Image 1: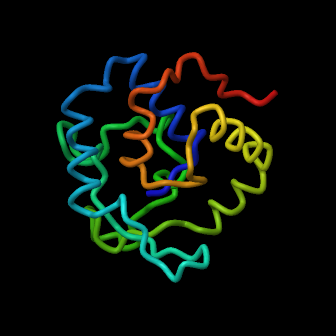
Image 2: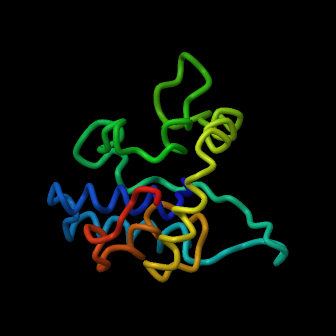
Image 3: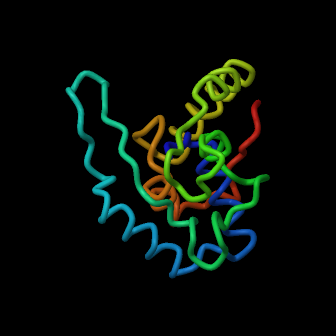
Length: 150
């Protein structure tokens, strides 16, 4: 799942405030990045990159399913659903791209927040795989960053 700087910062702030930014979670993020080579971009070099699937570090560790509540999940996660009623696991899941597009159009002001966060947090990405984004923010002081629009 790809996340914006705002989504990643909100999630990291939540993890830190709830003391869930544990060494175990960091190791799961690092292992996910390594296993799925999320730190390598594959594409044609013209801003067109292949999307890759990976098992999220929050999925199926202590809880059955995702360990994040609906209130803190990135929007892409909320729109990633199974599309066969008889299948309960991750098979045949895909994103509801139409819903995500409508959501982006309704909240276009977030683009300015994402740009500001990129600058304030020294990020080089507009969207990043969730575990890689969290690792980029792990040591940064998110609590001091304004996540609201100006």
